[in-house]
Image 1 (cartoon, rainbow, N blue to C red):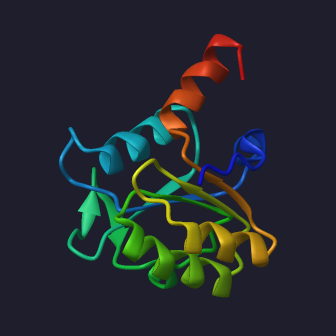
Image 2: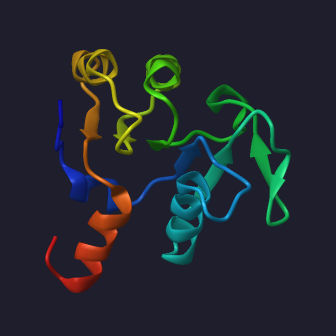
Length: 136
């Protein structure tokens, strides 16, 4: 069930967390993190199996990130996404972008019920490409 939300709102400022960051430069968790950083976004990595990324800390969970984040990109299997969005809501995160393959109807419904801006079924990298081309 795709949910478009207000995609542009994600790029109006605020700290990002990429939940499902990967140390493998060919995986989407790594690519999304790197691309956001390259475009000047403030972004932290979340992965319980990594301690750092490019000399910066990587946190085991959203709750372990020392400063708040306003928006989260989830790059995980759907069953884990359900847990992440609940943790995000408890922490006051207002925007959740579920990469294709990470979304679940339950997670989308939960985000909506919490008044979160939720995007699912759309790739953030493609959206960023369209923004750069002036088409978003």
